[in-house]
Image 1 (spheres, helix red, strand yellow):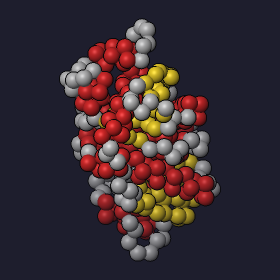
Image 2 (cartoon, helix red, strand yellow):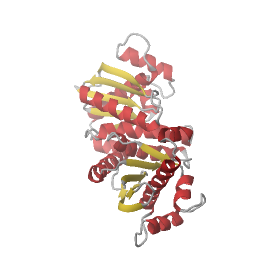
Image 3 (tube, chains in turn red, yellow):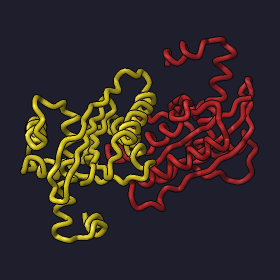
Image 4 (tube, helix red, strand yellow):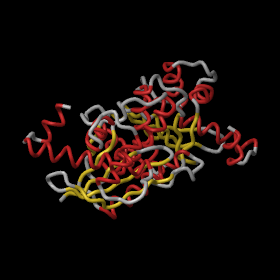
Length: 173
Length: 173
């Protein structure tokens, strides 16, 4: 069993999802939360809150591996800059604990969770709930965080099954 | 005397400049360096290096206040995202030490250092050298970091002289 932390960083809300997965990729839900950063007037204080709360979650749940969604293309330079800053704070909270971060494209996440690269947000929310047997509707950012954690569980199971060394596999992507 | 840390964050190189300034804005050079982040293949490792080296500099030099250049507009979403991540890592290194970050627009930095909002990079490099009595040509990112530190020294001196409370002044901007 390994514990996987998935993060969906955002400058307003950051989704956090934690699962335990076995070698076949089968996963059980451990924790999820959407960190609401909007209470801070100053942007730098949002980053402080994000870094601090994520660090506390890492201390409490002790994940073995971390996954994050790769940003394919942001809408515009201004939102890209804000998202980048949130992402930088989240990645710092992870790498300062000597954990590495695996990145997955949105398409890979959709493929792994719903089975098709064209799935929409609502389908992901629904399928994450089904796969992890969570009753009720999941908050969207927390669902995305759990989805990228599930993608990591699925991908590492496949990688191990077909025997590609992880390093070679990473270089190929 | 207060010690000011200026930061010019970048995903390839991050400039760091430290000055000591008195209440009139007069400043002396303490330290400057350009952190070269290009040795890391993985982007997340660059953020780790940036966060780690900046934290070490804060521990060694114990600045009282921190200044950073506000990004007006990045070239494109992709470079904005990269710059944002570097900026997020730099701001985290500062705010986790309970220091606050003052932000200045590029125009304010040019105005404070060269005396005109239309100054180019070379003029800033030159004037920072003259103001801080540094012989030889400064590395560009380190010069920008010293320039934003000088801007902060100059601005806080003006603010104190004309008696606007710092909080009110920040809200007005």
